Image (cartoon, rainbow over all chains, first blue to last red; front, side, top):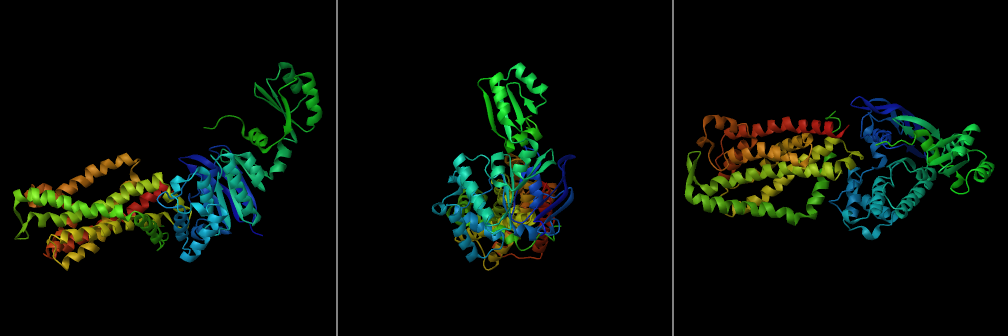
Length: 303
Length: 260
C-alpha cells in the first residue's frame, strides 16, 4: 500500500541557512509517526511544508500520492492541522469556531452543525459551546483545536507539539483523545519534544537535529539499540568510581555532578557500584526514549 | 500563481468577518450613525454660519450640503482603510487567524482578497447608514444619491487594497501611524473635502489630483447634489485603475510576508 506521506530529500533554506537539510521518510496509513527533536531542529518547518504552508526549497513531497506543489488544495482538503501556536478565533464562540472553520472546507451548513455537535461531545466541551474562546483554559483550548482539526474528517492529522504548556491532567486528556483517534485508524503525524508522549503515542518516529534525521525506528527498538535495557545514575560520583567505569570500558556520560552509565546487565553492575562506591544516590532504572534523545542530540542548550 | 490560487472560496473569509460583525453589530452601527451628526453639527451649524454658501459647478450650495457628501467619501475611505490595516493586522499578527486559515484549503490570495472585499463591504454598510442620516437633512438628491452605495464598494476596494499593501509591509501595529499621518490625514484635509480645491495654489491642486479621495469625494458630491457630468467617468476610472494596481500588489506582498 502506498504511503500517506512520502518525503524525499526535503530541504528548506532561510536566508542561506538550512532549517531542513535533506530529510526523507514515509508515513504509512494508520500509523502514528513522530518527528522528535530539540527546539530549532526543523520539526515545525518540516510539517509546515507537508501541510502546504511553506514551500520547500528542494526535494519531493507527496501526500496521498500527490505532489504538494501542484495538488495543494486536494491535499489540504484531506488533512487536519493543530498548529503549535493557538490559532483559535477569539472573535467567535466555541461552537462558531468549528462552524466557521467548516466553511473554509466548503462543508454544507447542516453537515457542519452535526459534526460540531459530535466533535464537542468527543472533546467533552458540549457545555462550553457558547463560551468565548478567550475564557477557556489552556487544556480546553487545545482540545478545541483538536476538534477543529477534525471538522473535515481528515485522512491525516498533523499535530505540532499538541501538549506543550499543558498541565498533567490536560495532557492526559489530550492523549486519551488521541488514543481514541488512533484506534479508529487515523494516520497521525506528530511533533513533540516530550519523550514520554512520543513513547506512548508513536508507532514509529525519527529524531531530527540541525535539519537532519539522526535515527528512525520504533520507540522500543531505538531504546534497545542505542541505550540498552537499563540506565544507572549516580549523583555526585567519586573520582574512584569514574576511573573504575572508564577502566571497565562501560558506556557512560560524565556530567560532573551526575554519572550516567548505560548498561545491558544492570542488576549486577548496580550491586558492584552501590556496594563499592556509593551507598546512596545510586539509581537503577529502565532506559527511556529520553536517554536515546539526549545521547543522540547532546545535552547542550539550543536557544 | 495568483490566478490559479484565487477562487470563489475567498467568500468564506468574507463570511467569517460577517459572522463576527453580526455578533457585535450594535457597536458597529454606532460610528456611522453618530459621526455624520457630529460633523454636520460642528461644520454645518458652527462653521457654516461663517462660510455661508459655496459655489460648486456654477451653483451656490449651502456649506452643509457641500461637506455632507465629502463626509460620505471620507467614511468610505476610513472604513475600508482601517479594516484592512489595524483590523487585518490584528487578525494576521496577534490572532493568527490567517495562519489557521492557511491550514485549510484556502490560499493566501483568497484570504487577502476576502479581507479586502470585506473591508469594501464595511464601507458599503457604513455608507448606507450614513446616507440615511444625511438624507434626513434633505441634502441628498435621489435617485442619483443611491449610486453612492455601489461607489462605496469601488472606493472601498481601492482604499482597502492600499491599506492591505501597507499591512504587508509594516513591522508593527505602531508603525501604522506613518501611512495615516502621511497618506490619510493629508487626503482628509486636501481632497476638496471641506473647501474647494480651487482655493489652493495650483501646484497643490495638481498634487491633490493624485489622491484617490479627491476623486471619490468628487463622485460622492456630484451624485449627492445630482450634478452629473462626463468628468465623473475620469474620477471613476482613476479609482478602478488604482484598485487594479494595488489589489494584486497587496496579494503579492502578503504572500511574500506570510509564506516563508
